[in-house]
Length: 153
Ligand SMILES: Nc1ncnc2c1ncn2[C@@H]1O[C@H](COP(=O)(O)OP(=O)(O)OP(=O)(O)O)[C@@H](O)[C@H]1O
Image (cartoon, rainbow, N blue to C red; front, side):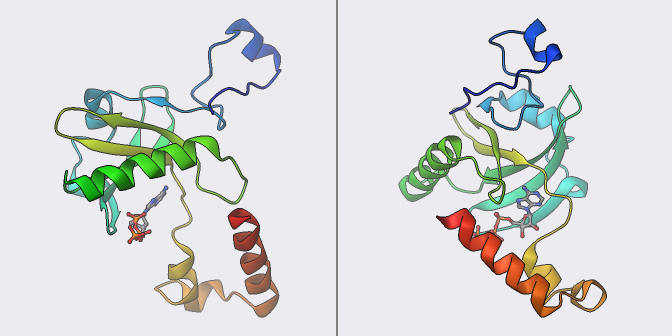
């Protein structure tokens, strides 16, 4: 959990301090940081909306592109889902799983920070607006299915 560091020379300079561009690390963000990274959770930055709440694109002060999920409610069910997501994704690292970058738990807000995925969802490639132009043939679909299953193991 946020504890593996690569051994390249530049990391040796900051020995023991995880680089924000190291995909194996996560940290706690302040609300102010995420507010500024997402341009105040502006509609222009909105990537989509799911069961938990809205997801916004952002860029941290050190240039890292992130997706910030803002929980829409603060009831006990949402709190539990937030805790489980952060706990599980914080422990698991896999090339086929979305990486956790961190979270923010302030008095009134619960936010989860992920790596930004620029290529949209699989759903949009299979059935959505890009289905026609991307043309996932059966060989590629099989690869996607196997890759997804590997991420679940
Ligand atoms: N890391 C990310 N990078 C880029 N876009 C993202 C990212 N996470 C989410 N999104 C966008 O935000 C939308 C909502 O994501 P979210 O994870 O909240 O919901 P979901 O997975 O679609 O549904 P549910 O919350 O019900 O499981 C996604 O459909 C996607 O377009």
